[in-house]
Image (tube, rainbow, N blue to C red; front, side, top):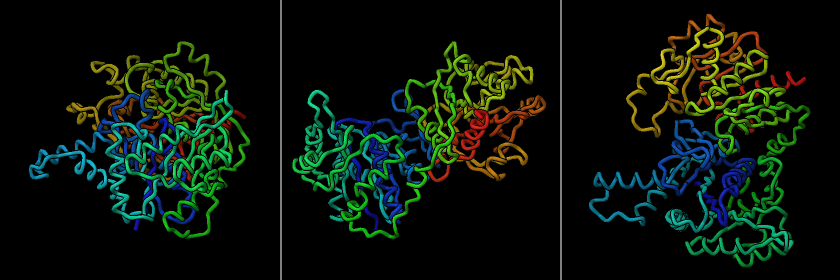
Length: 524
Protein backbone atom coordinates (compact mmCIF):
# COMPACT_ATOMS: atom_id res chain seq x y z
CA UNK A 1 0.00 0.00 0.00
CA UNK A 2 1.29 3.44 -0.90
CA UNK A 3 2.06 5.98 1.81
CA UNK A 4 1.49 9.69 1.18
CA UNK A 5 3.38 12.85 2.03
CA UNK A 6 1.84 16.25 1.32
CA UNK A 7 4.19 19.24 1.13
CA UNK A 8 2.60 22.62 1.75
CA UNK A 9 4.15 26.06 2.16
CA UNK A 10 3.43 29.20 4.12
CA UNK A 11 4.50 32.79 4.75
CA UNK A 12 6.04 33.31 1.30
CA UNK A 13 6.38 31.59 -2.06
CA UNK A 14 9.65 30.30 -3.55
CA UNK A 15 10.86 28.85 -0.25
CA UNK A 16 11.76 25.55 -1.90
CA UNK A 17 8.82 23.17 -1.45
CA UNK A 18 9.83 21.23 -4.56
CA UNK A 19 13.46 20.83 -3.52
CA UNK A 20 12.52 20.01 0.09
CA UNK A 21 9.96 17.41 -0.99
CA UNK A 22 12.35 15.89 -3.52
CA UNK A 23 15.07 15.75 -0.84
CA UNK A 24 12.76 13.82 1.49
CA UNK A 25 11.91 11.50 -1.41
CA UNK A 26 15.59 10.96 -2.15
CA UNK A 27 16.28 9.99 1.48
CA UNK A 28 13.45 7.46 1.31
CA UNK A 29 14.92 6.05 -1.90
CA UNK A 30 18.30 5.74 -0.17
CA UNK A 31 16.51 3.71 2.51
CA UNK A 32 15.28 1.32 -0.18
CA UNK A 33 11.80 2.66 -0.96
CA UNK A 34 10.38 3.62 -4.33
CA UNK A 35 9.17 7.21 -4.49
CA UNK A 36 7.46 9.55 -6.93
CA UNK A 37 6.41 13.18 -6.71
CA UNK A 38 3.66 15.28 -8.29
CA UNK A 39 2.71 18.96 -8.27
CA UNK A 40 -0.71 20.54 -7.84
CA UNK A 41 -0.71 24.23 -8.73
CA UNK A 42 -3.64 26.50 -7.78
CA UNK A 43 -3.26 28.93 -10.70
CA UNK A 44 -5.88 28.83 -13.43
CA UNK A 45 -3.65 28.40 -16.45
CA UNK A 46 -4.46 25.00 -17.94
CA UNK A 47 -0.73 24.32 -18.10
CA UNK A 48 2.46 26.43 -17.86
CA UNK A 49 3.24 26.00 -21.56
CA UNK A 50 2.04 29.47 -22.60
CA UNK A 51 3.28 31.35 -19.52
CA UNK A 52 5.88 34.10 -19.78
CA UNK A 53 9.33 32.85 -18.62
CA UNK A 54 9.81 36.15 -16.77
CA UNK A 55 6.81 35.29 -14.57
CA UNK A 56 7.18 31.59 -14.05
CA UNK A 57 10.65 30.53 -15.15
CA UNK A 58 11.24 27.80 -17.68
CA UNK A 59 8.59 25.47 -19.02
CA UNK A 60 9.72 21.95 -18.22
CA UNK A 61 8.78 19.17 -20.65
CA UNK A 62 7.73 15.78 -19.28
CA UNK A 63 8.50 12.57 -21.16
CA UNK A 64 4.99 12.34 -22.66
CA UNK A 65 5.05 15.95 -23.82
CA UNK A 66 3.23 17.56 -20.90
CA UNK A 67 4.37 21.18 -20.51
CA UNK A 68 4.91 21.67 -16.82
CA UNK A 69 6.17 23.76 -13.93
CA UNK A 70 9.96 23.81 -13.46
CA UNK A 71 9.61 21.95 -10.13
CA UNK A 72 9.18 18.73 -12.10
CA UNK A 73 12.79 19.16 -13.15
CA UNK A 74 13.80 18.92 -9.49
CA UNK A 75 11.71 15.76 -9.13
CA UNK A 76 13.48 14.12 -12.07
CA UNK A 77 16.98 15.25 -11.14
CA UNK A 78 16.62 14.23 -7.49
CA UNK A 79 14.52 11.07 -7.81
CA UNK A 80 15.72 9.79 -11.19
CA UNK A 81 12.08 9.39 -12.25
CA UNK A 82 10.43 10.19 -15.57
CA UNK A 83 7.56 12.62 -15.15
CA UNK A 84 4.35 12.57 -17.22
CA UNK A 85 1.02 14.41 -17.32
CA UNK A 86 0.11 12.63 -14.07
CA UNK A 87 2.83 14.57 -12.26
CA UNK A 88 1.45 18.02 -13.09
CA UNK A 89 -1.96 19.44 -12.26
CA UNK A 90 -3.37 22.97 -12.21
CA UNK A 91 -6.66 24.48 -11.10
CA UNK A 92 -7.28 25.40 -14.73
CA UNK A 93 -6.95 21.81 -15.91
CA UNK A 94 -8.94 20.41 -12.96
CA UNK A 95 -11.84 22.85 -13.36
CA UNK A 96 -11.78 22.32 -17.14
CA UNK A 97 -12.14 18.57 -16.62
CA UNK A 98 -15.06 19.00 -14.22
CA UNK A 99 -16.83 21.49 -16.50
CA UNK A 100 -16.42 19.21 -19.53
CA UNK A 101 -17.90 16.32 -17.52
CA UNK A 102 -20.85 18.51 -16.52
CA UNK A 103 -21.49 19.51 -20.14
CA UNK A 104 -21.53 15.84 -21.13
CA UNK A 105 -24.09 15.05 -18.42
CA UNK A 106 -21.68 13.12 -16.23
CA UNK A 107 -23.24 14.53 -13.03
CA UNK A 108 -26.85 13.68 -13.99
CA UNK A 109 -28.04 17.27 -13.70
CA UNK A 110 -26.87 17.75 -10.12
CA UNK A 111 -25.52 21.09 -8.98
CA UNK A 112 -21.76 21.12 -9.62
CA UNK A 113 -19.79 22.55 -6.70
CA UNK A 114 -16.25 22.90 -5.37
CA UNK A 115 -17.16 20.27 -2.77
CA UNK A 116 -17.50 17.48 -3.75
CA UNK A 117 -16.83 17.75 -7.48
CA UNK A 118 -13.59 19.76 -7.61
CA UNK A 119 -12.19 18.10 -4.49
CA UNK A 120 -13.11 14.66 -5.83
CA UNK A 121 -11.23 15.37 -9.06
CA UNK A 122 -8.19 16.49 -7.06
CA UNK A 123 -8.31 13.34 -4.90
CA UNK A 124 -8.73 11.16 -7.99
CA UNK A 125 -5.53 12.59 -9.46
CA UNK A 126 -3.64 12.19 -6.19
CA UNK A 127 -4.78 8.58 -5.96
CA UNK A 128 -3.29 7.73 -9.38
CA UNK A 129 -0.05 6.85 -7.59
CA UNK A 130 -1.67 4.27 -5.31
CA UNK A 131 0.11 0.90 -5.46
CA UNK A 132 2.62 2.24 -8.00
CA UNK A 133 5.28 3.38 -5.50
CA UNK A 134 5.98 2.92 -1.81
CA UNK A 135 5.72 6.65 -1.10
CA UNK A 136 4.03 9.38 -3.15
CA UNK A 137 4.98 12.98 -2.39
CA UNK A 138 2.46 15.64 -3.40
CA UNK A 139 3.54 19.28 -3.54
CA UNK A 140 0.79 21.88 -3.26
CA UNK A 141 1.87 25.05 -5.04
CA UNK A 142 1.35 28.55 -3.74
CA UNK A 143 1.07 29.63 -0.11
CA UNK A 144 -1.37 28.61 2.60
CA UNK A 145 -3.96 31.39 2.83
CA UNK A 146 -4.22 31.93 -0.94
CA UNK A 147 -7.91 31.78 -1.86
CA UNK A 148 -7.33 29.63 -4.96
CA UNK A 149 -5.51 27.03 -2.85
CA UNK A 150 -8.45 26.29 -0.54
CA UNK A 151 -9.95 23.43 -2.63
CA UNK A 152 -6.57 21.65 -2.56
CA UNK A 153 -6.28 21.92 1.20
CA UNK A 154 -9.83 20.62 1.57
CA UNK A 155 -9.00 17.71 -0.75
CA UNK A 156 -5.92 16.91 1.38
CA UNK A 157 -8.04 16.99 4.53
CA UNK A 158 -10.53 14.54 3.03
CA UNK A 159 -7.81 12.34 1.58
CA UNK A 160 -6.00 12.10 4.92
CA UNK A 161 -9.24 11.09 6.66
CA UNK A 162 -9.99 8.46 4.02
CA UNK A 163 -6.51 6.87 4.00
CA UNK A 164 -6.22 6.81 7.78
CA UNK A 165 -3.66 7.70 10.41
CA UNK A 166 -0.19 6.35 9.74
CA UNK A 167 -0.64 6.38 5.96
CA UNK A 168 -0.53 10.14 5.33
CA UNK A 169 1.58 12.95 6.75
CA UNK A 170 1.82 16.67 6.06
CA UNK A 171 5.14 18.50 5.89
CA UNK A 172 4.78 22.26 6.10
CA UNK A 173 7.57 24.52 4.86
CA UNK A 174 7.65 28.01 6.35
CA UNK A 175 9.90 31.03 6.63
CA UNK A 176 11.62 31.88 9.93
CA UNK A 177 13.09 35.32 9.19
CA UNK A 178 16.12 36.75 10.97
CA UNK A 179 15.57 40.34 12.11
CA UNK A 180 19.01 41.97 12.15
CA UNK A 181 18.08 44.88 14.42
CA UNK A 182 16.76 42.51 17.09
CA UNK A 183 19.38 39.85 16.28
CA UNK A 184 16.62 37.24 16.51
CA UNK A 185 14.92 34.56 14.46
CA UNK A 186 11.20 35.30 14.52
CA UNK A 187 8.69 32.43 14.77
CA UNK A 188 5.47 34.48 14.53
CA UNK A 189 5.10 34.11 10.71
CA UNK A 190 5.37 30.34 11.13
CA UNK A 191 2.77 30.36 13.91
CA UNK A 192 0.33 32.30 11.72
CA UNK A 193 0.99 30.03 8.73
CA UNK A 194 0.30 26.88 10.76
CA UNK A 195 -2.82 28.51 12.22
CA UNK A 196 -4.08 29.05 8.67
CA UNK A 197 -3.34 25.42 7.84
CA UNK A 198 -5.20 24.25 10.93
CA UNK A 199 -8.18 26.40 9.95
CA UNK A 200 -8.38 24.24 6.84
CA UNK A 201 -8.46 21.14 9.02
CA UNK A 202 -4.86 20.07 8.46
CA UNK A 203 -2.43 19.49 11.30
CA UNK A 204 1.22 19.46 10.19
CA UNK A 205 3.25 16.46 11.26
CA UNK A 206 6.60 18.09 10.48
CA UNK A 207 7.65 21.71 10.00
CA UNK A 208 10.67 22.56 7.88
CA UNK A 209 11.88 26.07 8.63
CA UNK A 210 13.55 28.04 5.86
CA UNK A 211 16.03 30.25 7.69
CA UNK A 212 19.28 32.15 7.24
CA UNK A 213 20.71 30.97 10.56
CA UNK A 214 20.40 27.61 12.35
CA UNK A 215 17.53 27.19 14.79
CA UNK A 216 18.63 26.97 18.42
CA UNK A 217 16.87 24.69 20.89
CA UNK A 218 14.70 27.47 22.33
CA UNK A 219 13.38 28.46 18.90
CA UNK A 220 12.53 24.83 18.11
CA UNK A 221 10.73 24.46 21.43
CA UNK A 222 8.71 27.60 20.75
CA UNK A 223 7.68 26.46 17.27
CA UNK A 224 6.80 23.00 18.59
CA UNK A 225 4.67 24.43 21.41
CA UNK A 226 2.72 26.99 19.39
CA UNK A 227 2.36 24.82 16.26
CA UNK A 228 1.46 21.60 18.07
CA UNK A 229 4.26 19.41 16.67
CA UNK A 230 6.96 17.44 18.43
CA UNK A 231 10.26 19.31 18.86
CA UNK A 232 12.13 16.55 17.03
CA UNK A 233 9.83 17.18 14.04
CA UNK A 234 10.92 20.83 13.73
CA UNK A 235 13.63 20.84 11.05
CA UNK A 236 15.69 23.60 9.49
CA UNK A 237 16.50 24.34 5.88
CA UNK A 238 19.35 26.82 5.78
CA UNK A 239 21.06 27.89 2.56
CA UNK A 240 23.47 25.29 1.15
CA UNK A 241 26.24 25.84 -1.43
CA UNK A 242 24.27 23.46 -3.67
CA UNK A 243 20.65 22.31 -3.55
CA UNK A 244 21.97 18.77 -3.95
CA UNK A 245 23.46 18.98 -0.47
CA UNK A 246 19.99 19.42 1.08
CA UNK A 247 19.27 15.66 1.33
CA UNK A 248 22.42 15.21 3.47
CA UNK A 249 21.44 18.21 5.61
CA UNK A 250 18.03 16.64 6.18
CA UNK A 251 19.62 13.24 6.83
CA UNK A 252 21.88 14.73 9.52
CA UNK A 253 18.76 16.08 11.25
CA UNK A 254 17.03 12.70 11.09
CA UNK A 255 14.27 13.78 8.71
CA UNK A 256 14.04 10.36 7.08
CA UNK A 257 13.89 8.55 10.43
CA UNK A 258 11.06 10.82 11.59
CA UNK A 259 9.14 10.38 8.35
CA UNK A 260 9.49 6.59 8.41
CA UNK A 261 8.38 6.51 12.05
CA UNK A 262 5.29 8.61 11.28
CA UNK A 263 4.39 6.39 8.31
CA UNK A 264 5.14 3.10 10.12
CA UNK A 265 7.87 2.21 7.63
CA UNK A 266 10.95 0.06 8.24
CA UNK A 267 14.01 0.67 6.03
CA UNK A 268 14.20 -1.86 3.20
CA UNK A 269 18.00 -1.79 3.07
CA UNK A 270 21.06 -0.34 4.73
CA UNK A 271 21.19 3.38 4.02
CA UNK A 272 22.89 4.07 0.68
CA UNK A 273 25.41 6.93 0.87
CA UNK A 274 26.13 7.04 -2.90
CA UNK A 275 24.33 10.39 -3.36
CA UNK A 276 26.43 12.00 -0.62
CA UNK A 277 29.59 10.54 -2.16
CA UNK A 278 28.82 12.17 -5.52
CA UNK A 279 28.37 15.54 -3.83
CA UNK A 280 31.77 15.23 -2.16
CA UNK A 281 33.60 14.89 -5.47
CA UNK A 282 36.53 17.32 -5.67
CA UNK A 283 36.36 19.93 -8.42
CA UNK A 284 39.93 20.32 -9.64
CA UNK A 285 39.31 22.51 -12.71
CA UNK A 286 37.25 25.61 -13.40
CA UNK A 287 35.70 26.84 -16.64
CA UNK A 288 33.64 29.84 -17.76
CA UNK A 289 30.67 29.32 -20.07
CA UNK A 290 28.78 32.17 -21.75
CA UNK A 291 25.05 31.44 -22.00
CA UNK A 292 23.45 33.78 -24.52
CA UNK A 293 19.69 34.01 -24.14
CA UNK A 294 16.59 36.17 -24.37
CA UNK A 295 15.23 35.88 -20.83
CA UNK A 296 18.37 36.32 -18.75
CA UNK A 297 16.66 38.79 -16.41
CA UNK A 298 14.90 35.80 -14.83
CA UNK A 299 17.43 33.18 -13.69
CA UNK A 300 14.79 30.43 -13.48
CA UNK A 301 14.10 30.81 -17.21
CA UNK A 302 17.18 28.63 -17.79
CA UNK A 303 17.00 26.52 -14.63
CA UNK A 304 17.52 23.12 -16.31
CA UNK A 305 20.39 24.52 -18.40
CA UNK A 306 22.16 25.71 -15.26
CA UNK A 307 21.57 22.44 -13.40
CA UNK A 308 22.72 20.33 -16.37
CA UNK A 309 25.96 22.32 -16.64
CA UNK A 310 26.52 21.95 -12.89
CA UNK A 311 25.90 18.18 -12.92
CA UNK A 312 28.07 17.64 -16.01
CA UNK A 313 30.85 19.57 -14.28
CA UNK A 314 30.39 17.67 -11.02
CA UNK A 315 30.88 14.29 -12.72
CA UNK A 316 33.94 15.60 -14.58
CA UNK A 317 35.50 17.20 -11.49
CA UNK A 318 34.98 20.67 -13.03
CA UNK A 319 33.46 23.80 -11.53
CA UNK A 320 31.31 25.45 -14.20
CA UNK A 321 30.78 29.21 -13.97
CA UNK A 322 27.80 29.89 -16.23
CA UNK A 323 27.48 33.59 -17.02
CA UNK A 324 24.33 34.87 -18.74
CA UNK A 325 24.28 37.48 -21.50
CA UNK A 326 21.38 39.17 -23.28
CA UNK A 327 21.47 38.33 -26.99
CA UNK A 328 20.49 41.95 -27.78
CA UNK A 329 23.56 43.40 -26.05
CA UNK A 330 25.37 45.64 -28.54
CA UNK A 331 28.74 44.73 -26.99
CA UNK A 332 28.02 41.00 -26.83
CA UNK A 333 31.03 39.77 -28.82
CA UNK A 334 33.40 41.90 -26.78
CA UNK A 335 31.94 40.61 -23.52
CA UNK A 336 32.17 36.90 -24.39
CA UNK A 337 35.83 37.04 -25.44
CA UNK A 338 37.94 34.81 -23.25
CA UNK A 339 35.13 32.42 -22.34
CA UNK A 340 35.86 28.71 -22.59
CA UNK A 341 32.57 27.86 -24.26
CA UNK A 342 29.38 29.36 -25.67
CA UNK A 343 25.92 27.88 -25.14
CA UNK A 344 22.78 29.20 -26.82
CA UNK A 345 19.52 27.84 -25.36
CA UNK A 346 16.00 27.69 -26.77
CA UNK A 347 13.57 30.56 -27.13
CA UNK A 348 10.86 32.01 -29.33
CA UNK A 349 10.62 34.95 -31.69
CA UNK A 350 13.07 37.12 -33.59
CA UNK A 351 14.26 39.33 -30.72
CA UNK A 352 17.98 38.76 -30.10
CA UNK A 353 18.43 36.28 -32.94
CA UNK A 354 21.02 38.30 -34.86
CA UNK A 355 23.12 38.55 -31.68
CA UNK A 356 22.96 34.78 -31.31
CA UNK A 357 23.98 34.24 -34.92
CA UNK A 358 26.96 36.59 -34.57
CA UNK A 359 28.05 34.72 -31.42
CA UNK A 360 27.80 31.39 -33.28
CA UNK A 361 29.91 32.79 -36.10
CA UNK A 362 32.47 33.93 -33.52
CA UNK A 363 32.52 30.47 -31.90
CA UNK A 364 32.86 28.67 -35.22
CA UNK A 365 35.62 30.84 -36.65
CA UNK A 366 37.61 31.06 -33.39
CA UNK A 367 37.30 27.35 -32.49
CA UNK A 368 35.40 28.07 -29.27
CA UNK A 369 33.38 25.05 -28.00
CA UNK A 370 29.76 25.68 -28.97
CA UNK A 371 26.49 24.05 -27.94
CA UNK A 372 23.17 25.14 -29.46
CA UNK A 373 19.81 23.94 -28.14
CA UNK A 374 16.52 24.16 -30.11
CA UNK A 375 16.50 27.80 -31.32
CA UNK A 376 20.25 27.78 -30.67
CA UNK A 377 20.59 24.89 -33.12
CA UNK A 378 18.36 26.65 -35.65
CA UNK A 379 20.49 29.78 -35.41
CA UNK A 380 23.58 27.66 -36.09
CA UNK A 381 21.91 26.35 -39.26
CA UNK A 382 21.09 29.91 -40.36
CA UNK A 383 24.69 30.98 -39.64
CA UNK A 384 26.06 28.07 -41.69
CA UNK A 385 23.67 28.83 -44.55
CA UNK A 386 24.68 32.48 -44.67
CA UNK A 387 28.42 32.21 -44.09
CA UNK A 388 29.34 28.72 -45.32
CA UNK A 389 26.80 28.01 -48.09
CA UNK A 390 26.51 31.61 -49.32
CA UNK A 391 22.73 31.84 -48.81
CA UNK A 392 22.85 35.44 -47.67
CA UNK A 393 19.10 35.82 -47.02
CA UNK A 394 18.81 32.58 -45.05
CA UNK A 395 16.38 32.87 -42.13
CA UNK A 396 13.54 31.12 -40.33
CA UNK A 397 9.87 31.21 -41.22
CA UNK A 398 9.29 32.07 -37.57
CA UNK A 399 10.98 35.44 -38.15
CA UNK A 400 9.64 36.14 -41.65
CA UNK A 401 6.85 33.96 -42.98
CA UNK A 402 7.26 35.44 -46.47
CA UNK A 403 11.03 34.94 -46.68
CA UNK A 404 12.32 33.16 -49.77
CA UNK A 405 15.21 31.28 -48.11
CA UNK A 406 13.57 29.58 -45.13
CA UNK A 407 16.26 27.14 -44.02
CA UNK A 408 14.15 26.79 -40.86
CA UNK A 409 10.48 26.26 -41.68
CA UNK A 410 7.17 25.21 -40.16
CA UNK A 411 5.99 21.68 -40.86
CA UNK A 412 2.85 21.38 -42.99
CA UNK A 413 0.86 19.87 -40.11
CA UNK A 414 1.64 22.94 -37.97
CA UNK A 415 0.23 25.42 -40.49
CA UNK A 416 -3.40 24.73 -39.59
CA UNK A 417 -2.84 25.09 -35.83
CA UNK A 418 -4.79 27.94 -34.22
CA UNK A 419 -4.23 27.30 -30.49
CA UNK A 420 -0.76 27.93 -29.07
CA UNK A 421 -1.05 25.72 -25.99
CA UNK A 422 0.02 22.07 -26.29
CA UNK A 423 0.18 22.09 -30.10
CA UNK A 424 3.93 22.02 -30.84
CA UNK A 425 6.08 18.98 -31.56
CA UNK A 426 6.53 18.22 -27.91
CA UNK A 427 7.66 15.23 -25.86
CA UNK A 428 9.91 12.30 -26.64
CA UNK A 429 10.90 11.48 -30.22
CA UNK A 430 13.46 9.01 -31.48
CA UNK A 431 16.41 9.80 -33.74
CA UNK A 432 19.08 7.82 -35.59
CA UNK A 433 22.69 8.94 -35.20
CA UNK A 434 25.24 8.59 -38.00
CA UNK A 435 28.33 6.59 -37.00
CA UNK A 436 31.67 8.37 -36.97
CA UNK A 437 30.19 11.69 -35.83
CA UNK A 438 30.72 13.69 -32.67
CA UNK A 439 27.15 12.84 -31.67
CA UNK A 440 27.87 9.12 -31.98
CA UNK A 441 31.03 9.54 -29.91
CA UNK A 442 29.07 11.32 -27.17
CA UNK A 443 26.10 8.95 -27.03
CA UNK A 444 27.90 5.72 -27.88
CA UNK A 445 24.82 4.46 -29.74
CA UNK A 446 22.89 4.99 -32.97
CA UNK A 447 19.43 5.13 -31.41
CA UNK A 448 18.40 7.92 -29.07
CA UNK A 449 15.16 9.33 -27.63
CA UNK A 450 15.01 13.00 -26.62
CA UNK A 451 12.42 15.56 -25.52
CA UNK A 452 11.28 18.26 -27.93
CA UNK A 453 9.33 21.52 -27.70
CA UNK A 454 9.23 23.53 -30.90
CA UNK A 455 7.12 24.38 -33.93
CA UNK A 456 9.80 25.03 -36.59
CA UNK A 457 12.32 22.58 -38.07
CA UNK A 458 15.50 22.46 -40.13
CA UNK A 459 14.03 22.52 -43.65
CA UNK A 460 15.11 19.19 -45.28
CA UNK A 461 15.08 20.87 -48.69
CA UNK A 462 18.32 22.63 -47.75
CA UNK A 463 20.03 19.60 -46.22
CA UNK A 464 22.17 18.57 -49.21
CA UNK A 465 23.22 22.13 -50.00
CA UNK A 466 24.33 22.79 -46.42
CA UNK A 467 26.10 19.44 -46.10
CA UNK A 468 28.06 20.19 -49.26
CA UNK A 469 29.13 23.45 -47.58
CA UNK A 470 30.50 21.59 -44.55
CA UNK A 471 27.58 21.32 -42.12
CA UNK A 472 27.19 17.75 -40.90
CA UNK A 473 23.70 16.40 -40.17
CA UNK A 474 24.60 13.72 -37.66
CA UNK A 475 21.11 12.59 -36.57
CA UNK A 476 17.61 12.52 -38.03
CA UNK A 477 14.06 11.73 -36.99
CA UNK A 478 12.69 10.29 -40.23
CA UNK A 479 13.71 13.05 -42.70
CA UNK A 480 13.99 15.81 -40.10
CA UNK A 481 17.54 16.78 -39.03
CA UNK A 482 17.95 16.53 -35.26
CA UNK A 483 21.67 17.19 -34.68
CA UNK A 484 24.15 19.28 -36.66
CA UNK A 485 27.94 19.55 -36.34
CA UNK A 486 30.94 21.27 -37.88
CA UNK A 487 34.10 19.40 -38.85
CA UNK A 488 37.57 20.54 -37.87
CA UNK A 489 36.35 22.12 -34.65
CA UNK A 490 37.09 21.16 -31.01
CA UNK A 491 33.37 20.95 -30.21
CA UNK A 492 30.52 22.38 -32.29
CA UNK A 493 27.09 20.82 -31.99
CA UNK A 494 23.48 21.93 -32.28
CA UNK A 495 20.51 19.82 -31.20
CA UNK A 496 16.85 20.38 -32.10
CA UNK A 497 15.68 18.83 -28.82
CA UNK A 498 16.11 19.80 -25.15
CA UNK A 499 18.79 17.60 -23.54
CA UNK A 500 18.68 19.70 -20.36
CA UNK A 501 15.46 17.84 -19.45
CA UNK A 502 17.28 14.52 -19.33
CA UNK A 503 20.11 15.28 -16.87
CA UNK A 504 20.05 13.98 -13.32
CA UNK A 505 22.50 13.58 -10.47
CA UNK A 506 23.34 9.95 -11.20
CA UNK A 507 23.76 10.50 -14.94
CA UNK A 508 24.40 13.89 -16.59
CA UNK A 509 23.35 14.20 -20.21
CA UNK A 510 26.16 13.03 -22.57
CA UNK A 511 26.11 16.18 -24.73
CA UNK A 512 26.40 18.43 -21.68
CA UNK A 513 29.19 16.21 -20.33
CA UNK A 514 31.04 16.37 -23.65
CA UNK A 515 30.61 20.14 -23.91
CA UNK A 516 31.97 20.74 -20.40
CA UNK A 517 34.97 18.48 -21.07
CA UNK A 518 35.71 20.32 -24.33
CA UNK A 519 35.53 23.67 -22.50
CA UNK A 520 37.98 22.37 -19.89
CA UNK A 521 40.40 21.24 -22.60
CA UNK A 522 40.25 24.69 -24.20
CA UNK A 523 40.85 26.30 -20.80
CA UNK A 524 44.07 24.31 -20.44
